[in-house]
Length: 292
Image (cartoon, rainbow, N blue to C red; front, side, top):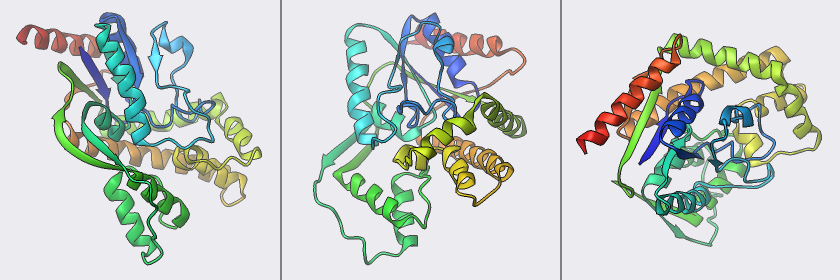
């Protein structure tokens, strides 16, 4: 059995994935595009060793913060792990909010390697930005960052995709967690405050002092905003507010993406009794097993 736990940032995906992995003696594969990077811990809300509760996790801390890593790379690496676990007759829980990674992993998402770079000099920034969004609607690349947009588009050309809606794996259940918008947004704001208390500022400053401006830093919400503060462009309060705002906007885009791209079984999270939500999801999964 393959269970994918999806939903917006800050909704409780990690806690749900651990509970389901324990219930079904499963291993966990992360589909978070930022948690693959080492040392980016607080700003990505990376699962901690304590939170893992001894459950084997894959696709976390596999790349240096200075490395570039694409959806093509993720598909190759994560499928190798998934196929290996299936051969061992292991149940698998996939968890994360990067929808494109999940779709590339589970669906008929094929890549053709193309090694030539395209000349984008005749395109305006707005045209390039539109092309970027057509490939990845969740891209955080700024419209004025021409070099980054051209690099992204050329990397995409090296791994051009052909997407069908057909699942490649049997017995896949996609579980989505949701909360009322105001409730979720408050939780996101509180989580950012907690990150700051836990040392997010210091974590980002270590990268800044080493002049690290990699894809991970420039993509992940929290680091790039704090870089603006370190550069003296905005105040710390402004940076924190911007992190909260962009995190809320990202959560909204995640809902839209999953609703439009996948058949998700949505569950409202009971924040006062999360075990109740866990039991509701398990009840659904057990009924699905019996039905099949």
